[in-house]
Image 1 (cartoon, helix red, strand yellow):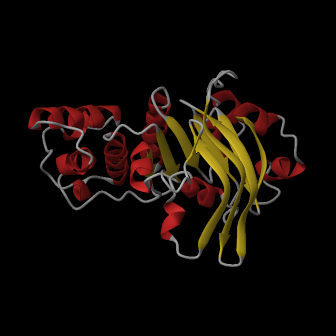
Image 2 (cartoon, helix red, strand yellow):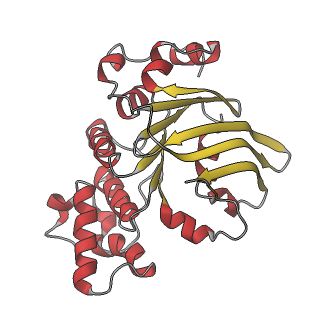
Length: 272
């Protein structure tokens, strides 16, 4: 596969986030082990709020492992051990007093493969608000469902078939439904793990446009194998290699003026 970045990348890089943007997620010396395997090594990074941060790097480099640390999904892996400090708004998310369920209400996640529930479109979006008690009436729930589907750019396509199964939608629509389901509980952070890898180019473009809209209200962190996508959608980029966070910075700097030779070699296609 040709890993060299598209020559149009630099022309399509979005405006960079202001340097004064407050930090939403702060990681300090994070290490992750799966049994004896040292999967992440001393990762430290600040992620600004209300922006898109892209994690890039070869397969198996640790980017998805780190993403899953931010909502403690690695807690579900028996052999996994996380060391170090990860804070959201200055508070340790691995504090034993913190309820992971409440954390995941603040940190939503969209997976690589669309995974709508085997329920109606309406019930897919209403599920989270129901279990978290976010609506006091059917009218309020209706409003949350409509608002979430609108924010996910799906309302006009499904408003007349809300009782149809979510699994009957196209792949791109299913992924937008999953995004609507995620934002229905009004999280502060949205994690996206290769959200477009199973989609065609048209559906991918819709999701990328959606990320640009959503970043004004949410902090978005995306794992992607596509350097072109990282350049198009993100304001900041972090490059992982062999479990190490090699370099992080503004997306334009990472792609045009990286400081580490490993980053330069990766974005020019010398390995990956």
